[in-house]
Length: 299
Image 1 (cartoon, rainbow, N blue to C red):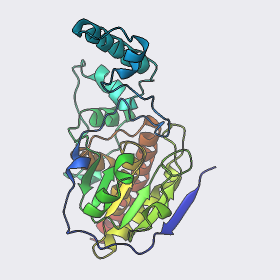
Image 2 (image 1 turned 180 degrees about the vertical axis):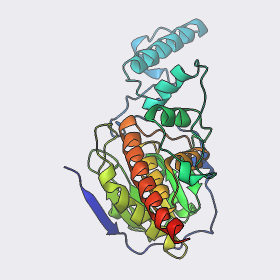
Image 3 (image 1 turned 60 degrees about the horizontal axis):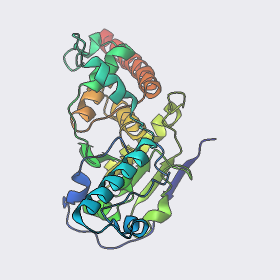
């Protein structure tokens, strides 16, 4: 059962100067370890301290013994990592397959002739995503005053203050996901909107498209408003909602929205979400064509 929460955090501290950016969230994400199971506790790894091994081998104290201990330590780390599941976004897996193909043709932009625009096939949209050149930071500005990021950035109060964020849209809300909520930001003046969505192709995220788009639009229409949209990794659920906003409120086609966001950040909506965006694109295109026909007849 999906939950849809809207709340406002309390008054908070004075925020630092605008456009002050903390270098920490500009560090690349580790996609191999940041899976959708963000809440799972990772196994502790040894960090160079061989005293625990020395207790088991009290007679080993010379240089060769220390080298032996180091080999044991490295072997232990390798075994622990072998047990960790390597979960990668769907597009990361498919992109490696596509790199060896010759056909790198992409859907064309609709800015030249919107009347002749047709929504591309799903496979063409996927190719458009796979070959974009955005960043892999914890958070990126993908549209004026719209920031797209991951759970690390969402949990960093300092990052939210540095960016002067006034609104937060959590696309991975809920007790088994990124369970921050309005109370987490109680010391900041932040309006919070949580959507309990799952990064699964079978999940219907489209039922939240208009509510999320309206929330983002409201944030941008607020004086000094800046909105941070996130999920676990900031590439699928949250990216899909930002794309829907650009299509609904900025009258972009899906192709233009993908190119706009993808030029600033590597995104990867799963195939189910991309199909739902494609259906939205078809619907909006038909509405725009219908609105243009009476205007052309009047001329």
